Amino acid sequence: MEKLVVKGGKRLVGTVKTSGAKNAVLPIIAASIMGVTPSHFDEVPMLEDVRTISEILKGLGIKVKTSQNNILDIDSTVVDSYEPPCELMRNMRASFFIMGPLLARMGKARIYMPGGCAIGARPIDIHLKGFEALGVEIDQSEGLIEVSAPHGLKGTTIYFDFPSVGATENIMMAAALAEGVTILENAAEEPEIVALANYLNKMGAKIRGAGTDVIRIEGVKELHGADYTIIPDRIEAGTYMIAAAMTGGDVVVENVLPEHQKPLIAKLREAGATVIEDIDNVRVIGNCPLKAVSVKTLPYPGFPTDMQAQIMAMMVVAEGTSRVTETIFENRFMHVEELNRMGAKITTADRSATIEGPSKLVGCDVRATDLRAGAAMILAGLVAEGETRIGDLHHIDRGYEDIVEKLRNLGADIERVDV
Ligand code: UD1
Image (cartoon, rainbow, N blue to C red; front, side, top):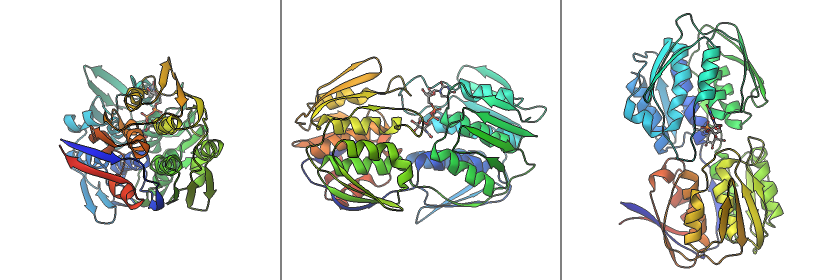
């Protein structure tokens, strides 16, 4: 078993480059299923989730080739299955993204219920309701969903009860090859949706309005492959920005689109850190002690739920009482117990956590209970006294490329050890 061992107390200084966005590349790889010619991708983060979805595509008969320098080539000229390998599907919730593309390309799909981080019930009703509206017939039995579009996919207007990121992406992909026009109302507005729409449009799709709450998709008959560069990962970048602030450091995070970081930048400034924005990088100077700030997670452009655990770790060492409210997922406070184990004073009630700071953290054995909770443990370890040993690293590996090397380059004392 491997663990990350972090020895706290180092001030992070230097430059770190953000990798391509996990949440952009996964639906984009799924979308490549619809291209009748090959696609080429740059700035692909080499993460466990990317390997999983690549294996899923291979299981459909698609050729996937990973090269040095974060390059991925996908040749989906031939797709010979509509039934992805069960075990891989169960590994990762994002695997469900292939339902839309398979329906569009093959007219049917047979899919096992997806897994992913256990941060809530994570139903898929919004996806299925959207597919039904496009004319899809759904047959659900224990853990297995069979979908087919015997009369083809038909464009229509769909109002999402909640702006689900995954449902917006899945339905947008299917609608790209549907007959007629599809309008998505109350759609999610995340930058990763804009990235997916841009790739689909390069493939020949006709999508307008991505990044707003109304997306218009005019169906086309065929999509071809395309070259695409994956956008920077705003969550990974945000994690390094918080690391800089918490350690009283001075870090330039490169390959960042500052307009994607507005809520975090606002909170860092409110907490007393200095944030200097440039065209494609952000410099964060931590002016410790930081002040307590309260945060409520919301769909984009609100504060991202994927940064909630990390900002909570920062609040533990900030002066004053802060409150973190989670409105997107119902079970996303698993890091609270782990942070308290290190000496934090956090109480939870319903969907809010109250943090009494500052606490002096002391390193101990903790778990990465989910992907972003794992990032929060690393952040806490960076400022804790002594040694923090983090287990269950597979969660962290799903979403952070080269995190140990990147933090070491900034001066952190962190290593991955076999125990
Ligand atoms: C995506 C991101 C994830 C992020 C989340 C919210 C990817 C690969 N993952 O996940 O990192 O935390 O957006 O920003 O992009 N819901 C339903 N029914 C559905 C779909 C969703 O009730 O059919 C609920 C979910 O349980 C959750 C909320 O809606 O409570 C938000 O989920 P959604 O926006 O769909 O998140 P994901 O696409 O799963």
